Amino acid sequence: MNIKENIARLQDFYILAIKAPLGIFRRPFYFREMIEQMDYMGTGSLFIVFLVSLFIGMALSLQISAELADLGLKMYTGKIVGVAIIREIGPVAVALVFAGRVGSGMASELGSMMLGHQVDILRVHGVNPVKKLVTPRVVSAIIMLPMLTVIGDAVSLLGGYYISVIVSHQSGSFYWNQIKEIMDFDNIFSGITKPFIFGYLISGISCYMGLSTRGGARGLRESTTTAVVFSMIMIIVSDFMLTKVLLYVLGMNI
Image 1 (cartoon, rainbow, N blue to C red):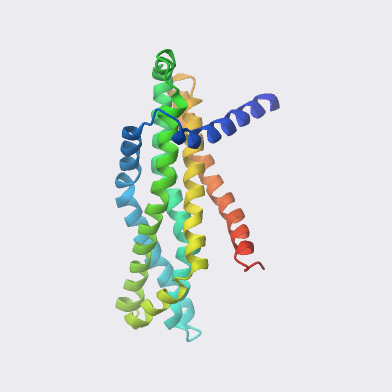
Image 2: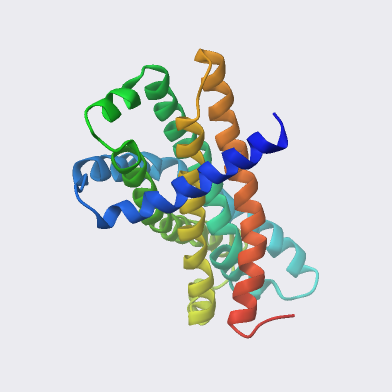
């Protein structure tokens, strides 16, 4: 693929990414499709987010507790675990899970519709495919990923509590007091801002790759794989950029 084709594809992606969220403000409103997508993304992802977040919280607490024990600071495990989960690890981990499950599902579903000419049928009947297929998915991802992140953070903190209190025999009340201390505006704002951006990126990339599917089953495999890989790369890259921006905005620039 030459440079001209790459630029054209990038332009098509930007147009799709801009049109998709703006479609929520124009009739017709496909609320039924949006509810279905929110159920698929939210309820369908709840168990895996719960499982992954729980073990991340326990593993992080176990590792940090072991390191702080040598310094005689094991009682501060809760504070370090809380900041790490809320600001950084929680949003990124849940977004990666979301990309693997939901992003691949969106890409494969839209890719199958492209190969089955269902998208062409929508155009023949005067239906805007972007508004009907992409907008509900993008808006649902922007709404559901932050909710899943909040749940994942809570579960991770519970996992950290289990390791700190039940395994390491620390004070439970001291653990939760430390968690309360870090629940300030800076930490919560940083932790809740990232999932909105991640949800937008994952859904936009996945929908674009799905609608770009060509070449039968092999093309569907390639578009689905590309959607997941690009989504994960963008999560990591954008996380660094967002962290830098948020530290500057909140007056914590280093």
